[in-house]
Length: 348
Image (cartoon, rainbow, N blue to C red):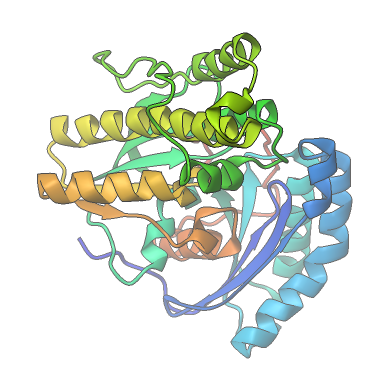
């Protein structure tokens, strides 16, 4: 199925957590995307909500202006405005949503509320080769891990989700145990390339269960127990550095095994040949490589957005906004920020 994407100029705005982002999608073509990340949270070991919202207030107008400048447009060219309204940090969401409401009212264009997780599902459409519906989507990030059968925009069958920690959360908690800075996912990925993934056989929770749910709290706990029982030894020829790399590789292998195995099984059992992986954890190199090789082996197609579109960005917000505008799915100024709205209960 070809996707019906609205013509015109869509301004997308994303401020759900600690990235301030704006993007311009014109006649289905991405003209610009600007992302400003808040790196100052690193020293706190996680995002500080109040500091994040203050940074959004400072950044949002310059970021939107930069997106306009790169696309060569002005307010007069914008035909609709898409903005994240859920889920996320309340203060952060409010900055983007209130800015979008004011601009929508000021220039007289429709407002389209976007569910952040739903936007991740369709981030693969930002690439030249696009999946065909129905497809199975794995959304993996710091706050979410869920598996869906996607039949169309707004038409999803929920297959499974994490019962405890999200995949990205497990990476960050394990990284903390290994003495890595927040966010730890990219550093674990880097260390794992030089480590031995067979060094420790960490648990693959629920991997053989006849469901599509995930559980990642146990693997983090197993890493903690192993580190407490086994102090780094210089006898291994490198001490802590070698242990750190081997643990990172062993942990990452276990995570990838579970994510790939359950997603492939879901696709096979639902008779679909296209798989989409999206969200921040989809930037992990081993996860991408494993999905690609396993899908090729099975005659399936694997779709993953480039790294810029895997993490939080306004390009995916604009893309879903264009899809919704084609379907007449717009909102009025009563749209409210909802920090904990599950995708299943989103506003339509």
